[in-house]
Image (cartoon, rainbow, N blue to C red; front, side, top):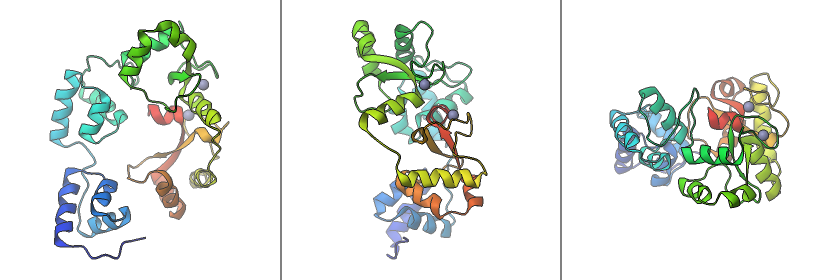
Length: 263
Ligand SMILES: [Zn+2]
Ligand SMILES: [Zn+2]
């Protein structure tokens, strides 16, 4: 629904300022108490362009903070960008983080996680499906966290290796997610299923990960944004269901949790 409320001069000014700064549409909508669609429509009428790339200031900030060893979770807030985006930008710029490791592919996690994984297994692999990529630490009894933990938690476990061996196991992201969902008794949301089926149809494919073909459990399949936008959660689902198949093909694809997080 597009808001019918008239735009005041103050609101337009704020919209222009925030847009130029690269503030996410969803956040601008929140500030202005308007819908994302209303903000997007007004911005396009005003001919505003979102600087989705990196501004010089952001690049400078990244260079300085990254080399200092500022953690990704802090940088995420400072730059208003995801950890994966920040990590791959750093790789492109060739800047090294004193505590983060990068191999051929981007490894988003710090040495504590890698160290813990190697502490639990000499040759790390998922205890459920056996793959040796996309590994994370699974709590045998879930604590409620899905995939991300912070340095403090890893440090806690590193200091208590015997306890860690009892509480944690190595799993890939897909199996880790299913383990948590099973524990929490979460089934597939029917709306989500419809959305995935529609995206598959737009690409003339079946409902599988477009990278690896995973199709065993739909709960592990995720909507991946090919073109960045601000739609998330149920707002995204309704958006996809309203779009033409041609548009969907350009904007969205399906990836499993492993491939989506490692992209
Ligand atoms: Zn697995
Ligand atoms: Zn996959």
